Length: 297
Image 1 (cartoon, rainbow, N blue to C red):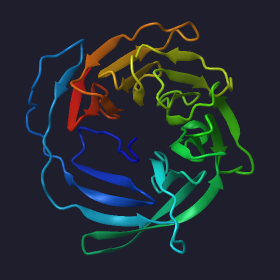
Image 2: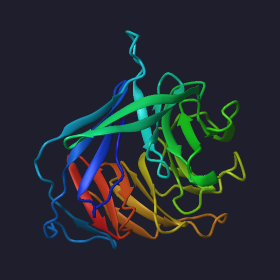
Image 3: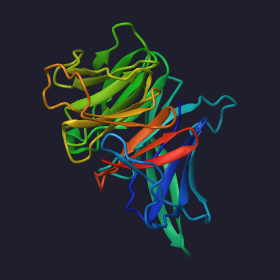
């Protein structure tokens, strides 16, 4: 499973990525996007159109290294990270050592054209009984203090930075299968989605009704790898899986059962990840094999 990623914005002229590399995080300045006319390289299928865009080959620069294991020979690998959208100086990381770490970023004095970025640990907590596989900030409560995590113990847990003495278990997998990813609804912070290791379904949860899924999306025929909520709608979500399928679902009928997706796209390989563009919701990005495809809904 990938240990890092970034939000996809096809309109951006510059993209700053944070990469999770084994036991530390690095903030890296990426090259600018160049945007030539789209190159259509395959006939559209099932309502979603692929498009390829180029990226210039210019300098990549390390901005900041976040390492909380400076005095230890053993460094527990990181598994995921998430930026706080309300406060971009906050980011969270998860690790196989059962912890989540919240980092604070600081920008120093500008020297020439370089902003000196440094980071410090705001808090580190034991989040699960086993490895933690994903972390994501919620937009609830002002969008700054609440986040959730999933892990090998098969649970989804919710935390509040203002009250770290306890957490709330939102969901536990009935068979205690490890949960690999979670994703918050972009419009309604009451809802989140998660998926189990080697599972073929996505579970939709309502934090107001803990431990009881409000929907199960189970039309895939191989294990699910990625989840992305629509940035402009609270009732649309895209899932991607090893069956080569990217599926868009309309979940507004919850809690009634949702049998089939409303759109489907078939790639030429197992889809490893999916992102829905935050500023231009007509675009979805998927990756498979050694390819990145940008699809128009």
